[in-house]
Length: 248
Image 1 (cartoon, rainbow, N blue to C red):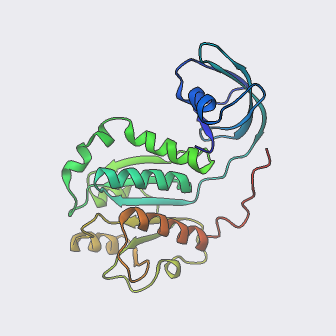
Image 2: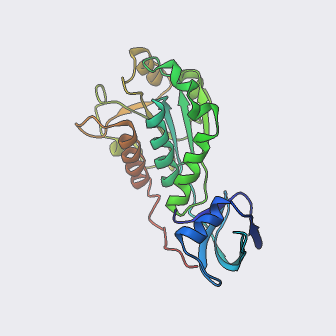
């Protein structure tokens, strides 16, 4: 991890023996007294903290010495046909690391209903994937995640002011970047399940004012398409023009 994430801001904190974050500081960072580490607070600032004590019992004490704003979340939401669990894990990690605003999964007509019953979703494992993605990316924004029973229900939970684009290898006539109007500042991107959209789902998109777009002539894996789509949309929306390196 490139940054250690915490639920709430603090000025000083003792990590108890056995805390994975303390173990990471000791074993991976090989911290000594005075070592500086990067930390972040969920949906808040990131910071630089100093190791002020290393207990014989395995505890670690930290003191915040500087803070700075964390990167803002991208104005991009994802609407995704529920994929198989190992693919969903990758999507959660990559989407969180890129800073998307939220992810809305839904049970697609050509998807497998049992995917929603996997341990990924019935335990907190999905939250762990988000957490790891955020720590990897040096950010602090944890995307909101929800699961809907079908496409129309999912769409009803999304706004209408953003560019709304469904990626489609077969019926799209324009690439993604050309499908985002220059006068919008946010986007909702829909990606289908492994077997693609059903005819009924394409009709649902069209009836709700969505455009169909593609990412080129090649068929991509779901996690690859997610990363490529977010990057293309973020570039078109000019999201990264004012990003700066950390100053702490």
